[in-house]
Length: 243
Ligand code: C5P
Image (cartoon, rainbow, N blue to C red; front, side, top):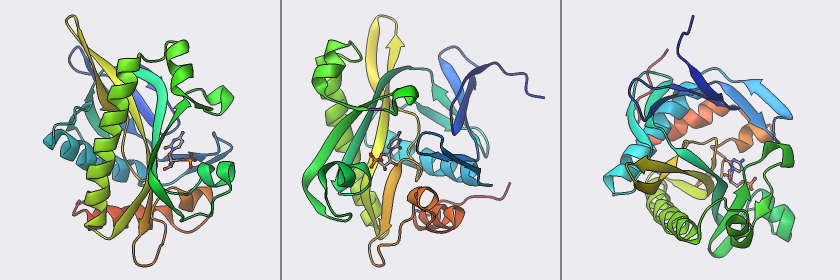
């Protein structure tokens, strides 16, 4: 019986009230969803892997001075995070064409992009997270122009850093999604990276074989998901204990 107060439950995670004010507990579930919940499965062990991989990513980002919501991992499935007001915009950065950009622009999957491209999507399940422009974001007040600038520069830094980190272990970072939150501290407010960074929200291809080591395996029935996530963790030197 879990008596903690549940603040929010999403497709792959639950947020509980944290032990101190300004904190939350982020719980990683085993649920995998795709195409806005049209495809759903329970994949045993996914939550544990994503908890560890995301801890690794956020710890490294903090180490290079990028502020995140991560405080510390609590157990196999949970981490303590700072409570933020989520900006209702998903930021996607692409280095190689894959997924929706291929459909939208008629590009062949795997085409290197002339430069990294940042896109914004409005977080709204009922609308299938439509792509939006900076104009929409400021007109509807989802973020200020300054916040958009901050999201772009942080996303570029995260992309540069993570691209190098993955390249070092033979993985191409094709694209990924970031979410940002506002952290209020007295009368100060700053944007920090929130949510998670895991193979659920990234495209990761083996440099040699081009094998996909991310959630596209689930979306497109390309093979065992856990095996791929374990391979990512193993290459990064992350030890994932058995539950
Ligand atoms: O589907 P699309 O090609 O636009 O996705 C781009 C990247 O953003 C992929 O790595 C995907 O996993 C991630 N993404 C996500 N959550 C969404 C939409 C995209 O993690 N709601």
